[in-house]
Length: 134
Ligand SMILES: [Zn+2]
Image 1 (cartoon, helix red, strand yellow):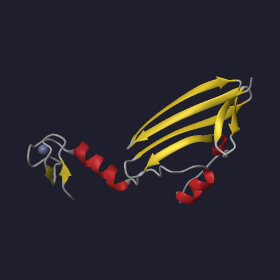
Image 2: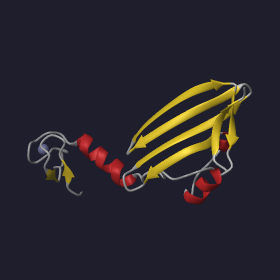
Image 3: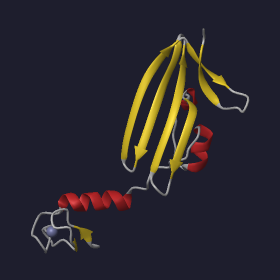
Image 4: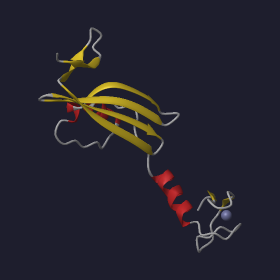
């Protein structure tokens, strides 16, 4: 096993056979689990734009229904800094549901709002936007 940072004393150590820190003696099982999550899980692909793009960028992506019913309005991301922000919209019979998402590292925050009588338009540059029906 490689050295892991002890969550208690902050030293880079190799846990003993009981998973305890040789420096401060605290049990390191949570630090070990966090370490294994870090090395085993590939980080999420942050710059996907639609289903075709996802299938291109992520080899084992599986879809059900039409994920592109969520239309991408805006998106910005940085792989280097591990963040992504997006705004998506889905048309309904009498309005639009808007979904905003922010991801920072492993943390994600999402929020939705329904806008009655709105619909998804396209401007002269091909950008999608939310427009009022009235
Ligand atoms: Zn320690």
